[in-house]
Length: 438
Picture 1 (cartoon, rainbow, N blue to C red):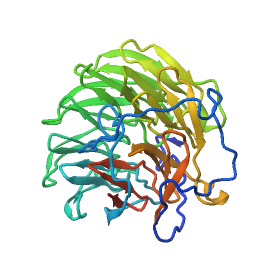
Picture 2 (picture 1 turned 90 degrees about the vertical axis):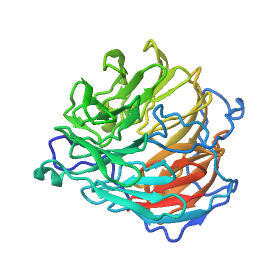
Picture 3 (picture 1 turned 180 degrees about the vertical axis):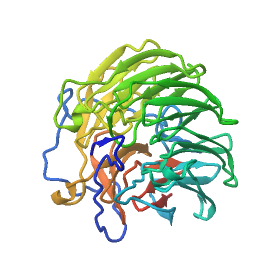
Picture 4 (picture 1 turned 30 degrees about the vertical axis):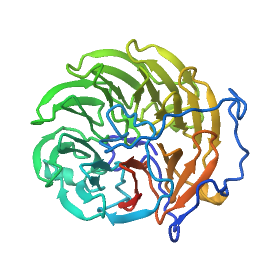
């Protein structure tokens, strides 16, 4: 759904909440019913022509921010083969007619941190779900209490949780006790999760202003303003940061992708993810909502109707494809996994841009399940690509063949991708419940 920034409420999609009954775990490897659509094989290769090789799964101790880490490149995450539900816990207010949950949780310091639709931040012991602290974030002005999309996102660094809010507030919170260390208010809403790195917090406002704040005291270091857009989609791309090159990659609602020197805010190179191909009204909007990914000396960026690989140093396009995504691509070795805007999951060779396989992700066990469903992912965990759906499924898909391996049936839908760290997988439902599997 499209919105004007001056309207009162906005939503990127309509979430369909289906009554799903009790949870059911379908064993990996078992085929499951899919939509009555033919299998789609990419034109670049015949099925089985290319054998995909991936890095071995590795244990990561934390999921520090949107996309897993500052580069949005968490690789192949390790977990147990047999997933069992460890605990579940409500963390506040979920979706309503006015508000939506758009933020991934954060895993750090043996805790799980979440922010709800009312900008309430909570911390839980990741072993048993015990609530450790709870903090309501408040706007600077009374008239901002009624803004929508209050909980924009979280990030973690050096013992602090950084929270961005729909009323423009950025907060540094002590991860141990939930006390506010500093706060900084922008004049316009923030609806994108912050990025941390280089002792900075990077936040982006709804008016395409990117701001770098000092992690220690919240003071402003620099700001960069891209061209403003009158019509945008809810949410947006969290910037990607590479410490070794001191480069920040930011995507904006006008389709601009910009490389910025992270220490000074000086622009290095820029491009626009604009395609001449349009298949519906939304595709004419150039907003970048998928987090850019840094890896293999390249930037992988997806717009509404275009996916491209860009040389990190020069800004030169290396290849492009005429399909887009609203979800962050997932990089593992030399393979990029992308969930397209029409819910096709694709495995792409990062060197050539050629599609190795293409799988239509089902929306459920019946054709009728597909009505109004949105998809979030993928995340690569233990030789499985995980994708959440807004009607209550988490699908497992083989990263090697694209085969549907199984699914987890949830009691509610999920509009954000799973997160994973330290052997655990965390799913956030639209009614603000944390589901933790191990």
